Amino acid sequence: MRKFVNSRAESLKPSGIRKFFDIVQHMEGAISLGVGEPDFVTPWNVRDAAVRYIRLGYTQYTGNRGLPELRELVCRYLKERFDVEYSPERTIITVGASEAIDLALRATCEVGDEILVPEPSYVSYAPAVSLAGGEPVAVRCSAGNDFILTPEILEEAITPRTKALILPYPNNPTGAIMTREQLEAIVPVIIKHDLLVISDEIYAELTYVGRHFSIASIEGMAERTVYIGGFSKAFAMTGWRVGFVCAPEEVDAAMLKIHQYTILCAPNMSQRAAVTALKEGFEDDFSTIAEMRDEYEKRGKFLADSLNSLGLSCFMPKGAFYIFASVESTGMDGDEFANRLLAAKKVAVVPGGAFGSAGRRFIRCSYATSMSQLNDAVLRIEEFLSECGAKAD
Image (cartoon, rainbow, N blue to C red; front, side):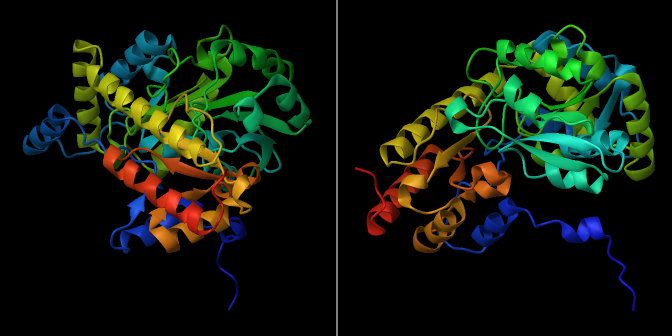
Protein backbone atom coordinates (compact mmCIF):
# COMPACT_ATOMS: atom_id res chain seq x y z
CA MET A 1 0.00 0.00 0.00
CA ARG A 2 1.35 3.44 -0.88
CA LYS A 3 2.03 6.13 1.68
CA PHE A 4 -0.98 8.40 2.22
CA VAL A 5 0.28 10.82 4.89
CA ASN A 6 1.50 14.25 3.81
CA SER A 7 5.25 14.46 4.39
CA ARG A 8 5.00 17.92 5.99
CA ALA A 9 2.43 16.70 8.50
CA GLU A 10 4.37 13.51 9.15
CA SER A 11 7.55 15.42 10.00
CA LEU A 12 5.91 17.63 12.64
CA LYS A 13 6.84 16.98 16.24
CA PRO A 14 4.01 16.69 18.80
CA SER A 15 3.48 19.78 20.97
CA GLY A 16 5.87 19.91 23.91
CA ILE A 17 3.19 21.72 25.91
CA ARG A 18 0.37 19.24 25.52
CA LYS A 19 2.49 16.27 26.58
CA PHE A 20 2.84 17.55 30.14
CA PHE A 21 -0.74 18.81 30.28
CA ASP A 22 -2.05 15.36 29.31
CA ILE A 23 0.05 13.67 31.98
CA VAL A 24 -1.10 16.06 34.72
CA GLN A 25 -4.77 15.45 33.88
CA HIS A 26 -4.36 11.87 35.12
CA MET A 27 -1.98 12.54 38.03
CA GLU A 28 -3.67 12.97 41.41
CA GLY A 29 -2.36 15.88 43.47
CA ALA A 30 -0.42 17.42 40.59
CA ILE A 31 0.09 21.15 40.15
CA SER A 32 0.20 22.38 36.57
CA LEU A 33 2.24 25.44 35.62
CA GLY A 34 2.08 24.22 32.07
CA VAL A 35 -0.76 25.31 29.82
CA GLY A 36 -1.25 29.04 29.20
CA GLU A 37 -4.93 29.37 29.97
CA PRO A 38 -6.43 32.00 32.28
CA ASP A 39 -7.76 30.57 35.52
CA PHE A 40 -10.41 33.29 35.54
CA VAL A 41 -13.90 32.41 34.31
CA THR A 42 -15.41 34.37 31.42
CA PRO A 43 -17.27 37.35 32.99
CA TRP A 44 -20.87 36.57 33.89
CA ASN A 45 -22.39 39.22 31.63
CA VAL A 46 -20.66 37.64 28.62
CA ARG A 47 -21.81 34.14 29.53
CA ASP A 48 -25.32 35.35 30.20
CA ALA A 49 -25.48 37.09 26.83
CA ALA A 50 -24.41 33.93 24.99
CA VAL A 51 -27.09 31.87 26.73
CA ARG A 52 -29.69 34.51 25.91
CA TYR A 53 -28.77 34.55 22.24
CA ILE A 54 -28.84 30.75 22.04
CA ARG A 55 -32.32 30.75 23.57
CA LEU A 56 -33.39 33.33 21.00
CA GLY A 57 -32.23 30.99 18.24
CA TYR A 58 -29.05 32.71 17.05
CA THR A 59 -27.46 29.40 16.10
CA GLN A 60 -26.99 29.80 12.35
CA TYR A 61 -23.92 30.66 10.30
CA THR A 62 -22.88 34.27 10.14
CA GLY A 63 -21.30 35.92 7.12
CA ASN A 64 -17.79 34.74 6.33
CA ARG A 65 -16.14 37.85 7.73
CA GLY A 66 -18.16 37.65 10.91
CA LEU A 67 -20.86 39.84 12.41
CA PRO A 68 -20.65 43.43 11.08
CA GLU A 69 -21.28 44.78 14.59
CA LEU A 70 -18.39 42.77 16.02
CA ARG A 71 -16.00 43.89 13.29
CA GLU A 72 -16.98 47.51 13.90
CA LEU A 73 -16.35 47.07 17.63
CA VAL A 74 -13.01 45.33 17.05
CA CYS A 75 -11.78 48.23 14.90
CA ARG A 76 -12.98 50.77 17.46
CA TYR A 77 -11.24 48.76 20.20
CA LEU A 78 -7.95 48.65 18.29
CA LYS A 79 -8.07 52.39 17.59
CA GLU A 80 -8.98 53.47 21.10
CA ARG A 81 -6.76 51.04 23.00
CA PHE A 82 -3.67 50.79 20.77
CA ASP A 83 -3.97 53.51 18.12
CA VAL A 84 -4.12 50.82 15.41
CA GLU A 85 -6.32 51.67 12.45
CA TYR A 86 -7.94 49.05 10.21
CA SER A 87 -11.38 49.02 8.61
CA PRO A 88 -14.15 46.48 9.32
CA GLU A 89 -14.03 45.63 5.60
CA ARG A 90 -10.46 44.32 6.11
CA THR A 91 -11.20 42.47 9.34
CA ILE A 92 -12.04 38.76 9.63
CA ILE A 93 -13.42 37.15 12.79
CA THR A 94 -11.57 33.86 13.18
CA VAL A 95 -11.70 30.71 15.25
CA GLY A 96 -9.24 32.06 17.77
CA ALA A 97 -5.89 33.69 17.05
CA SER A 98 -4.61 30.25 16.00
CA GLU A 99 -6.73 30.25 12.85
CA ALA A 100 -5.57 33.80 12.14
CA ILE A 101 -1.91 32.71 12.26
CA ASP A 102 -2.64 29.83 9.90
CA LEU A 103 -4.58 32.07 7.50
CA ALA A 104 -1.82 34.67 7.38
CA LEU A 105 0.82 32.08 6.57
CA ARG A 106 -1.19 30.12 4.00
CA ALA A 107 -2.22 33.34 2.28
CA THR A 108 1.36 34.58 1.91
CA CYS A 109 3.78 31.64 1.79
CA GLU A 110 5.15 30.26 -1.45
CA VAL A 111 7.25 27.08 -1.42
CA GLY A 112 10.75 28.02 -0.33
CA ASP A 113 9.84 31.38 1.24
CA GLU A 114 11.70 31.99 4.48
CA ILE A 115 9.64 33.23 7.43
CA LEU A 116 11.57 34.61 10.38
CA VAL A 117 10.49 33.27 13.77
CA PRO A 118 12.07 34.89 16.85
CA GLU A 119 12.94 32.26 19.44
CA PRO A 120 11.95 31.40 22.06
CA SER A 121 8.34 31.79 20.92
CA TYR A 122 4.98 30.05 20.68
CA VAL A 123 5.23 26.42 19.62
CA SER A 124 2.80 26.70 16.68
CA TYR A 125 4.63 29.27 14.54
CA ALA A 126 7.32 27.08 12.95
CA PRO A 127 4.98 24.11 12.27
CA ALA A 128 2.38 26.45 10.75
CA VAL A 129 5.04 27.92 8.45
CA SER A 130 6.08 24.43 7.35
CA LEU A 131 2.50 23.35 6.69
CA ALA A 132 2.02 26.45 4.54
CA GLY A 133 5.01 25.45 2.41
CA GLY A 134 7.44 28.01 3.81
CA GLU A 135 10.69 27.51 5.66
CA PRO A 136 10.78 28.72 9.28
CA VAL A 137 14.06 30.46 10.14
CA ALA A 138 14.82 30.75 13.84
CA VAL A 139 16.06 34.14 15.04
CA ARG A 140 17.70 33.63 18.41
CA CYS A 141 16.87 36.23 21.06
CA SER A 142 18.92 36.11 24.24
CA ALA A 143 18.11 36.32 27.93
CA GLY A 144 20.89 38.88 28.28
CA ASN A 145 18.81 41.23 26.14
CA ASP A 146 15.45 40.34 27.75
CA PHE A 147 14.57 38.26 24.67
CA ILE A 148 13.77 41.26 22.46
CA LEU A 149 14.37 41.36 18.72
CA THR A 150 17.12 43.85 17.84
CA PRO A 151 17.84 45.39 14.42
CA GLU A 152 21.23 43.66 14.34
CA ILE A 153 19.80 40.19 15.02
CA LEU A 154 17.05 40.76 12.47
CA GLU A 155 19.40 42.01 9.76
CA GLU A 156 21.69 39.03 10.20
CA ALA A 157 18.84 36.55 9.67
CA ILE A 158 17.54 38.04 6.42
CA THR A 159 18.34 36.46 3.05
CA PRO A 160 16.99 37.09 -0.47
CA ARG A 161 14.32 34.44 0.24
CA THR A 162 12.99 36.13 3.40
CA LYS A 163 9.36 37.19 2.95
CA ALA A 164 7.93 37.82 6.40
CA LEU A 165 8.67 38.27 10.08
CA ILE A 166 6.48 36.86 12.82
CA LEU A 167 6.47 39.37 15.68
CA PRO A 168 5.27 37.70 18.91
CA TYR A 169 5.12 40.38 21.63
CA PRO A 170 4.13 40.32 24.45
CA ASN A 171 5.90 37.02 24.23
CA ASN A 172 4.96 33.47 25.08
CA PRO A 173 7.04 31.89 26.72
CA THR A 174 9.39 34.62 27.96
CA GLY A 175 7.07 37.35 29.23
CA ALA A 176 9.10 39.87 27.20
CA ILE A 177 7.62 42.93 25.55
CA MET A 178 8.97 45.37 22.97
CA THR A 179 8.67 49.08 23.68
CA ARG A 180 7.82 51.75 21.15
CA GLU A 181 11.50 52.64 20.79
CA GLN A 182 12.55 49.02 20.30
CA LEU A 183 9.89 48.47 17.63
CA GLU A 184 10.76 51.71 15.86
CA ALA A 185 14.38 50.53 15.75
CA ILE A 186 13.53 47.44 13.65
CA VAL A 187 11.18 49.22 11.23
CA PRO A 188 13.97 50.51 8.93
CA VAL A 189 15.27 46.93 8.53
CA ILE A 190 11.76 45.68 7.72
CA ILE A 191 11.21 48.40 5.11
CA LYS A 192 14.72 48.06 3.64
CA HIS A 193 14.07 44.37 2.89
CA ASP A 194 10.37 44.85 2.02
CA LEU A 195 9.12 42.35 4.59
CA LEU A 196 5.60 41.54 5.69
CA VAL A 197 5.05 41.55 9.47
CA ILE A 198 2.70 39.02 11.07
CA SER A 199 2.16 40.58 14.48
CA ASP A 200 0.59 38.25 17.04
CA GLU A 201 -0.67 40.56 19.78
CA ILE A 202 -2.98 38.17 21.62
CA TYR A 203 -1.41 39.23 24.96
CA ALA A 204 -1.61 42.98 24.20
CA GLU A 205 -3.83 43.76 27.20
CA LEU A 206 -1.55 41.83 29.56
CA THR A 207 1.30 44.35 29.54
CA TYR A 208 2.62 45.42 32.94
CA VAL A 209 5.16 48.07 31.96
CA GLY A 210 3.34 51.06 30.53
CA ARG A 211 0.83 50.44 27.77
CA HIS A 212 1.15 47.99 24.92
CA PHE A 213 2.48 49.51 21.72
CA SER A 214 1.78 47.92 18.33
CA ILE A 215 4.12 48.04 15.34
CA ALA A 216 1.00 48.53 13.20
CA SER A 217 0.55 51.99 14.75
CA ILE A 218 3.88 53.23 13.33
CA GLU A 219 3.45 55.34 10.20
CA GLY A 220 3.57 53.20 7.06
CA MET A 221 3.47 49.85 8.91
CA ALA A 222 -0.26 49.02 8.86
CA GLU A 223 0.01 48.50 5.09
CA ARG A 224 2.62 45.77 5.61
CA THR A 225 1.34 44.29 8.89
CA VAL A 226 -1.09 41.45 9.52
CA TYR A 227 -2.49 42.23 12.97
CA ILE A 228 -3.67 39.23 15.02
CA GLY A 229 -5.67 39.49 18.23
CA GLY A 230 -8.47 37.80 20.08
CA PHE A 231 -10.52 37.34 23.21
CA SER A 232 -8.91 34.25 24.76
CA LYS A 233 -6.36 35.77 27.12
CA ALA A 234 -7.51 39.23 28.22
CA PHE A 235 -11.21 38.36 28.25
CA ALA A 236 -10.76 34.83 29.69
CA MET A 237 -12.59 33.38 26.68
CA THR A 238 -10.29 30.54 25.58
CA GLY A 239 -12.99 27.94 24.96
CA TRP A 240 -15.17 30.33 22.96
CA ARG A 241 -12.66 30.26 20.06
CA VAL A 242 -13.04 33.77 18.76
CA GLY A 243 -10.22 35.92 17.44
CA PHE A 244 -9.66 38.43 14.67
CA VAL A 245 -7.19 39.36 11.96
CA CYS A 246 -6.74 42.67 10.13
CA ALA A 247 -4.52 42.94 7.07
CA PRO A 248 -3.51 44.88 3.96
CA GLU A 249 -6.08 44.57 1.16
CA GLU A 250 -4.45 41.86 -0.99
CA VAL A 251 -3.51 39.69 1.99
CA ASP A 252 -6.96 40.16 3.49
CA ALA A 253 -8.64 39.03 0.25
CA ALA A 254 -6.52 35.88 0.11
CA MET A 255 -7.14 35.06 3.77
CA LEU A 256 -10.89 35.50 3.32
CA LYS A 257 -10.97 32.94 0.49
CA ILE A 258 -9.09 30.38 2.60
CA HIS A 259 -11.37 31.10 5.56
CA GLN A 260 -14.45 30.66 3.33
CA TYR A 261 -13.36 27.27 2.08
CA THR A 262 -12.00 25.83 5.33
CA ILE A 263 -13.89 27.36 8.26
CA LEU A 264 -16.80 29.35 6.79
CA CYS A 265 -17.27 31.43 9.95
CA ALA A 266 -16.56 31.60 13.66
CA PRO A 267 -19.41 30.34 15.92
CA ASN A 268 -22.40 32.69 15.96
CA MET A 269 -22.92 32.57 19.74
CA SER A 270 -19.21 33.13 20.43
CA GLN A 271 -19.25 36.20 18.20
CA ARG A 272 -22.28 37.58 20.02
CA ALA A 273 -20.58 36.96 23.36
CA ALA A 274 -17.58 38.90 22.06
CA VAL A 275 -19.88 41.78 21.07
CA THR A 276 -21.07 41.94 24.67
CA ALA A 277 -17.51 41.77 26.01
CA LEU A 278 -16.48 44.78 23.94
CA LYS A 279 -19.68 46.82 24.34
CA GLU A 280 -19.69 46.54 28.11
CA GLY A 281 -15.92 46.85 28.20
CA PHE A 282 -16.16 50.30 26.62
CA GLU A 283 -18.78 51.26 29.19
CA ASP A 284 -16.60 50.49 32.22
CA ASP A 285 -13.19 51.26 30.63
CA PHE A 286 -12.36 47.55 30.54
CA SER A 287 -12.11 47.37 34.33
CA THR A 288 -12.38 43.55 34.32
CA ILE A 289 -9.24 43.34 32.19
CA ALA A 290 -7.45 45.74 34.54
CA GLU A 291 -8.37 43.61 37.56
CA MET A 292 -7.07 40.44 35.91
CA ARG A 293 -3.92 42.18 34.74
CA ASP A 294 -3.18 43.47 38.25
CA GLU A 295 -3.63 39.98 39.68
CA TYR A 296 -1.35 38.45 37.04
CA GLU A 297 1.30 41.08 37.73
CA LYS A 298 1.24 40.27 41.45
CA ARG A 299 1.56 36.54 40.75
CA GLY A 300 4.36 37.08 38.24
CA LYS A 301 6.38 39.12 40.72
CA PHE A 302 5.93 36.47 43.40
CA LEU A 303 6.96 33.62 41.13
CA ALA A 304 9.94 35.44 39.60
CA ASP A 305 11.25 36.48 43.03
CA SER A 306 10.77 32.94 44.35
CA LEU A 307 12.52 31.21 41.45
CA ASN A 308 15.41 33.69 41.49
CA SER A 309 15.87 33.02 45.21
CA LEU A 310 16.12 29.29 44.39
CA GLY A 311 18.84 29.90 41.80
CA LEU A 312 16.59 29.52 38.77
CA SER A 313 17.50 32.80 37.11
CA CYS A 314 14.73 34.74 35.34
CA PHE A 315 13.81 38.34 34.64
CA MET A 316 10.63 39.94 35.88
CA PRO A 317 7.94 39.32 33.24
CA LYS A 318 6.72 42.46 31.50
CA GLY A 319 3.74 40.90 29.73
CA ALA A 320 1.65 37.74 29.20
CA PHE A 321 1.59 35.32 32.18
CA TYR A 322 4.77 33.28 31.93
CA ILE A 323 8.15 33.01 33.62
CA PHE A 324 11.02 31.70 31.52
CA ALA A 325 13.55 30.47 34.07
CA SER A 326 17.06 29.21 33.43
CA VAL A 327 17.88 25.80 34.94
CA GLU A 328 21.52 25.96 33.89
CA SER A 329 22.67 26.24 37.52
CA THR A 330 21.24 22.76 38.18
CA GLY A 331 23.38 21.05 35.56
CA MET A 332 20.22 19.88 33.78
CA ASP A 333 18.60 21.04 30.58
CA GLY A 334 14.94 22.02 30.53
CA ASP A 335 13.71 18.63 29.37
CA GLU A 336 15.48 16.68 32.12
CA PHE A 337 14.46 19.20 34.77
CA ALA A 338 10.79 19.15 33.76
CA ASN A 339 10.57 15.37 33.61
CA ARG A 340 12.35 14.83 36.94
CA LEU A 341 10.34 17.55 38.69
CA LEU A 342 7.06 16.05 37.49
CA ALA A 343 8.05 12.54 38.57
CA ALA A 344 9.42 13.58 41.96
CA LYS A 345 7.10 16.40 43.04
CA LYS A 346 4.11 16.34 40.69
CA VAL A 347 4.72 19.85 39.41
CA ALA A 348 4.35 20.30 35.66
CA VAL A 349 6.38 22.93 33.84
CA VAL A 350 7.23 23.03 30.13
CA PRO A 351 10.78 22.43 28.87
CA GLY A 352 12.08 25.56 27.19
CA GLY A 353 13.25 23.56 24.18
CA ALA A 354 9.58 23.25 23.15
CA PHE A 355 9.83 26.93 22.14
CA GLY A 356 12.98 26.56 20.04
CA SER A 357 16.59 25.60 20.58
CA ALA A 358 17.31 28.97 22.22
CA GLY A 359 15.23 27.78 25.19
CA ARG A 360 16.95 24.44 25.72
CA ARG A 361 18.25 25.31 29.19
CA PHE A 362 15.06 26.97 30.37
CA ILE A 363 11.64 26.00 31.66
CA ARG A 364 8.38 27.88 31.18
CA CYS A 365 6.12 28.33 34.18
CA SER A 366 2.63 29.73 33.67
CA TYR A 367 1.29 31.75 36.59
CA ALA A 368 -2.29 31.68 35.30
CA THR A 369 -3.23 29.80 38.45
CA SER A 370 -4.06 30.71 42.05
CA MET A 371 -1.56 32.11 44.55
CA SER A 372 -2.07 29.08 46.78
CA GLN A 373 -1.14 26.78 43.90
CA LEU A 374 1.90 28.92 43.11
CA ASN A 375 2.98 28.82 46.78
CA ASP A 376 2.69 25.04 46.86
CA ALA A 377 4.55 24.70 43.56
CA VAL A 378 7.45 26.86 44.81
CA LEU A 379 7.75 24.76 47.98
CA ARG A 380 7.82 21.55 45.92
CA ILE A 381 10.43 22.98 43.55
CA GLU A 382 12.56 23.99 46.53
CA GLU A 383 12.32 20.45 47.93
CA PHE A 384 13.20 19.01 44.54
CA LEU A 385 16.29 21.20 44.19
CA SER A 386 17.42 20.35 47.72
CA GLU A 387 16.94 16.63 47.22
CA CYS A 388 18.89 16.57 43.95
CA GLY A 389 21.60 18.85 45.35
CA ALA A 390 20.92 21.53 42.77
CA LYS A 391 19.86 24.49 44.89
CA ALA A 392 22.13 27.48 44.40
CA ASP A 393 24.02 28.96 47.37
